[in-house]
Length: 489
Image (cartoon, rainbow, N blue to C red; front, top):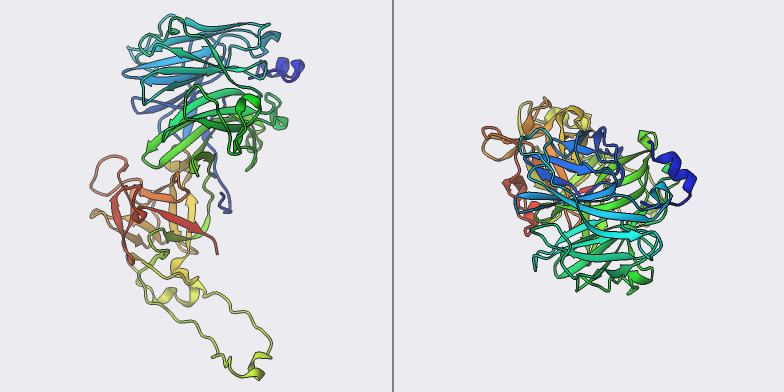
């Protein structure tokens, strides 16, 4: 968080894509500014924001206020270390109150659930400070527990000076004795550190904030083989000299993404969190954003929110399409005498796609199994994917129904872990589908539940067991059988 124009801050403080029909943002009351990385605690998701409060979600889709963090201040982060949660935040700074004199504090809690008898924060400990005159601003901390060494790092700072790196003791949350801050970047704020495949990534928020629909916040990245840097972007520019590759900018009627956080859901399934300075569809309010996180050539980039629409559902295995197991009905077309020159001089008359009403009476009336076959623009291969508003969701999306275009015939899981289609969508859990974009840009498709099995399904996905055989099988990111694409034709 930074000061771009003092009177704007003074007014504000009190208060790859699929071109389908529409997309959906987080629902409920996802209103927050400067959110922490998402944290999971006892089956719920939490994120904390500027001002001391935060949001809670039962499923990762519907959010409401209720998270509790004492101390007020700005731009917190949270990290689970063993069986405790470390919370870090800036007490002042960032231009808040007109100055850059700040303090960064840490505190612990055994749980994030304010209704738990174990809920109690420890006294805050100061780990960094700025005097308002030096070339630094002690605010906007981001935490990284290095998975290769177990060392705990904090990056912090704003446009007012340098982004700095310090080391904390992961057992106490205190500054490591004798540790001196290291300057690692400029021209950004609200930084975060992540590690992946031998690289450390520094995510920084660039642009202007706190100006609603006029905010230009965006998130950029550099990477290094060492946590201490230097952090270079995709063309070799050092972030200490203004470098940074774009991760996410304005689009899809939201602007000003800032305060990056990474959440790994499963192998090959990741999301990034942020806030949007303004969601045009929610009155220009600052809201929580959750997007798929993709990795392209070793660089993180935000995926697109899945959009409703009508698609070919294409198997990554070979490129064949999911379809109803019905007879192929040939289309009528006059034979072309392409070898006769006079025939080629006739007027061109476009061929219309086969219509549903031309074939639907040839289909069985009851359940129809699904199969995979060559895509030919036919009605039995065209799937309408529509959000089901009251069915809940998961991190990044609501649950969807998948029906044959123009009908209520719905894709469904069976008690034998197979897939079929039922004549009418009823809203049953086995007819609800979770659609997640993967780190490589493909998708996994997962039924909410499997008949006869208790609870929400998190293991079995739509799977191409053979070139023509769809089924349900355990998720395997390393197998193209588990992956699908959505094509519009």
